[in-house]
Length: 186
Image (cartoon, rainbow, N blue to C red; front, top):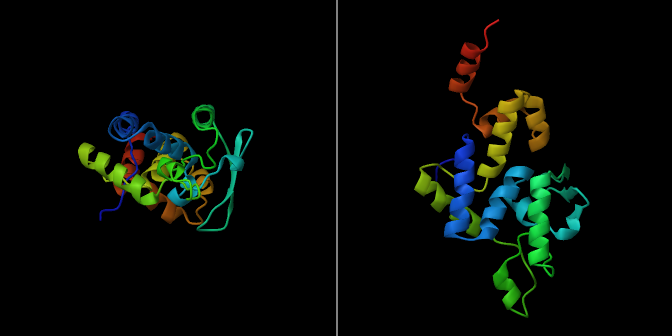
């Protein structure tokens, strides 16, 4: 299985959202769009409960690291969350599985990681990009780095402890570094 990539082109980011909604559901497009804005690992993204959202902040403990993520939600994310809450007022999870809602004896559960991974992979095949559940997080990190060139900010957002890991994670390659040297003349 190839390593998934950050989506470096803004039009491709929008195309992925469109294809997820068209070929799968609005819910999967929401996973993509909210995932881009939160830069969480997929397990943490899918486990978000409406109770974790307080005013304009998301406060959760990351399952992998145990670190507290206290994320200010931007206007786009707040609007999407408000729509989801309005459409599904009885849901516990932001991305609750509808299938479980139909079964009266099954406790509510979020969408499965496997389902989201499969949808992203299928869209990725169509547009010839290696997409997966980490693509949202990598894409957010890549674009923050491109806008700021501040690896420290990207590390803090992704809650990484090494610059090298962060640079590899967001897909900054030698070609990108070479281009920076060519474009910045002093």
